[in-house]
Length: 84
Image 1 (cartoon, helix red, strand yellow):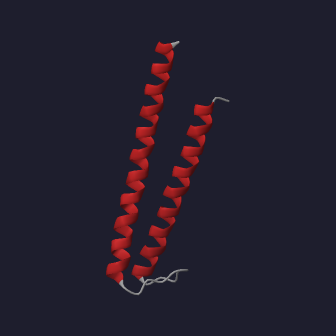
Image 2: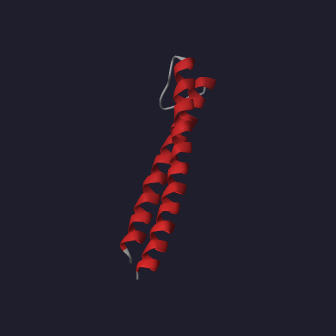
């Protein structure tokens, strides 16, 4: 395997872990706000809502970072082809 392929796999796994953990915590906070039983209970609904907004922002940032990384990898491979 090429080093760039390994980097992309590790990057994708890291982004996937960050996105999935954020989504799970969003669902836990939504359960807390709606009054359902959950592992973590946030007493202040305003704080829980602001945490949800920040987690949504972090998921969006991870998605954008993945797109930027893919564009960077494409540009790097094009440069490598021209330099050979």
